[in-house]
Every structure is written in C-alpha cells, then in structure tokens.
Image 1 (tube, rainbow, N blue to C red):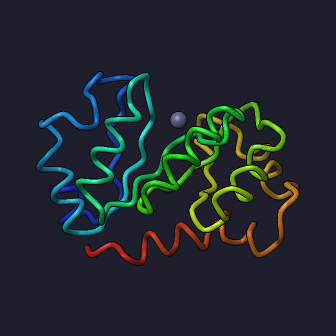
Image 2: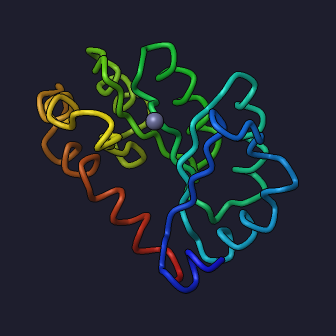
Length: 162
Ligand SMILES: [Zn+2]
C-alpha cells in the first residue's frame, strides 16, 4: 500500500496479459479491500472468461470504480461492455483502441449515456492524436464529449479518499 498511501496513487492496474492472475483471485483481495475502502479506481484489461470475474469483483467492491479498457474496440465489444455497465453502476467503459471503429462511441452513449464512458489514449504506446479525433469528431453532443474527455474521470478522482 506504499504506492497508494504514501505516494498517493489513486489507480490500481493489474495486467492479466502479463501475470495471468485472474482479477477475482484471492491474491488480490487485500488490494481490492484497500481500494474499496479508499474508493480508488482500477483499469482492467479483459481476457476470455473475465466477464464473470469482473461481475464478481464489481459486486463485492462497490466503491471501486472499475474502468474496462478498450471498450470501444469493436461493436461486439461495445455491446458486451454496455451490458456489464448496465448491471453495475461502478463499471466505466474506457474507449481507446488503434482502429478507432466508427460508431462504437455513439452506440455506447446512446445505450448507456455519456456519464460512464472514459477517454483514454494508451500513451505513449499509442499515438493519442487519432484517439482524440475519434472522440472529438464523433456524432454526439459537445456536453457529452466534455464528460468523456475529462469530467467523468475528474468525478472518479474526486471521490477517492487518499
Ligand atoms: Zn491497453
């Protein structure tokens, strides 16, 4: 808890593609409990079979804001993620993806509302200019763009207790 308590990191990121530890593994319990108590946020990359694990921790740790990475990466992913977010109000959909598929942001806004969609870039791995353009030129209102570009994330950060 040094990184959170002492250094002030408000985010948690475990990376299944590198460590192969499922997000509902008991190994993570002390971390999730701390995060829940301090209302931190977590960025999750999903893997096959992850949906049930995400449901389990979203239910068990209602004070953690769970950001699902790359939710705008395809229409089928967007559909799947919207379903999850409708079920749990502590689930947020982060959009970034190199392919910037046309229509996935509009779909998420229409089905879920803009309040739980989060802009991301994966910088410096990914060039953030097309990511910016994807959202800036999407067919949604300016106030929804403002929410997604930063206001939603500000709300998530402001409720953290560190
Ligand atoms: Zn990523």
